[in-house]
Structures are given as C-alpha cells and as structure tokens.
Length: 166
Image: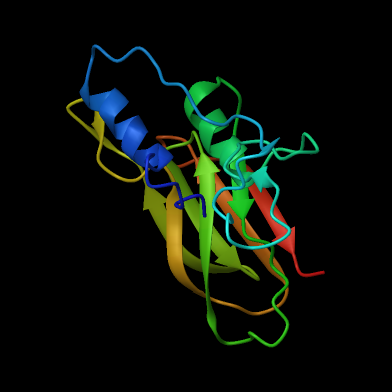
C-alpha cells in the first residue's frame, strides 16, 4: 500500500504533511518517477533483481497504485483509485486491507452492497488531520464486488469505483 520506502526516504504522506504545514515549501522532487534498470532496491540481495522498484510508474510505463496517490494530490482531475484486487481464493471470511486514493473528502466502502464504513478527510488550520488516503484495515473478504462511493460536502454521491472477483 505504498508505505514502504528506502532508509533515506519517507512515505508520501509524511512529505505531504510537511508541505501542508510549511508555507515556504513550494513542492517536492520524487526519486524515482519511473522504475529504472540498475540500483536494485529494495531487493538488492535477491536474484535476479536488476531494477529500482520505487517508481511511481513501472519499467513498462504502466502507472502503479502510488501514481494515483500523487495524482489525487497534484492534479485537478477527478481521482478515485480503489485497491487491492478482489480475488483472494481461500481467504473467505478473513480480513483484507483496502485503500482508496481520492481527492474527494468523503468515501464509503461496500462489499457486495453491504457498507464497511465511511471515511472523511478534514482540515484543521490548513493541515489535513486524517491520512492522505482512505484506509479500511480489516475488511472481511467475500467474493463478489468491492465498491467505493465518494461524496461531496452535502452528502451527494459524485463518483464510484468497483472491483469484482475474477
């Protein structure tokens, strides 16, 4: 869930919070935007590792989940990205972490039409008090449909994303 990083770096959420708290910070530089050959990190001891895997976009040019976290922060686009996949054979009845990257302030998660709870971002003095992602740490897995619905400040549904079991 994009919370791993090398010892010399930080998670995006920590950087975002620093930007929100400090008016003098104009932006950030991300190393790396694209995965690249060489510097096999974080898998330096495993073979046949040959790439740095911390990019926002993979070696083939395909956006990773983290791409949508940055997009929700940096762009004016409507962003709703739900993860992970929803195909977990043999995990029926066990819990799975679910996250949503979005630039909307309120979201509700559903599994097969049943609510798993709502989350909200809110600001207190210019600082986002909640995380920069919506996180449901213990969603009971059952095959079917995972859906997140996002809402405006008046409680009106304004978008959704669905993932179904393969």
